[in-house]
Image (cartoon, rainbow, N blue to C red; front, side, top):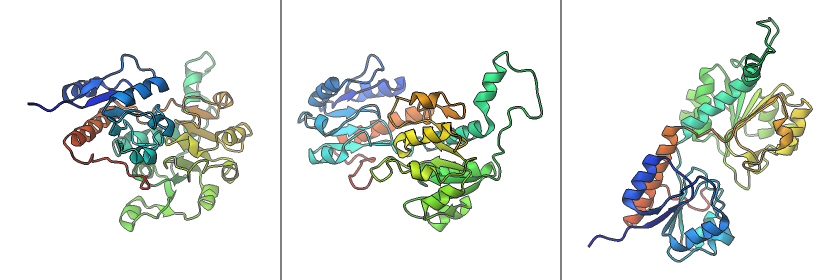
Length: 328
């Protein structure tokens, strides 16, 4: 007699190929629309399902986990980060948590370089001029930006994505510098010709471009605070494709308005989808709606990892992308 399929609830719409495969493998409940679930709907799902598949828009905190049913044994997060989930509380309640690491490295690194180029070369401003009636033709001093080659890039967080950013930036002729919890091994550092800075303050004060590529943890919250932002050179720019909480957004906005920092390219924001209106009004800022990982290939690969984690769990084994508290 065939074993009963796991009951799986998915909180957002996923690529169709992923949803189809989930339907074949599990007793799955999919979303009809793509709006985030309410907390009440999440509670109902967690009370009835064996597996919950949330995304970064779902805050699975201790209060929510306290209302989970006895059936819930796995939270298979559709995303690399798990700061939306109280992993320690989940494990205390006997609920495993998995994620999808490594899938979006190249996509996010590509977007990081795109933002650097866009800010330094004023690409969105140029588009607005070209698409309006303001453009009177080429002029020697019009739309002057900054050359990318030769600039010092300071990468904050030299994990998979940080190293991928470094490889791309080096191909553009940038000088690679980085700050990380631990220095890279020589075999990783030398091919990038990267300079390690133990002091983040000293690195920030000397860079032309700062790229935020570290995760959001209690120790990285507002790592780029007002004091540290003031260390940046007035002609420097900052790019963030990681987590908005790493930068004090109010302090950054004040400094950009005062031209104490030359520009910023932001794909993530401190309050999620709620962007500071003052930030939106600034001409020296490029804002994107969390597009860093938004490729068809990447989203499908994320779904495939979720499927593997659930199927491995269903077969009685440890999910390959199990998240362990204390190792995040």
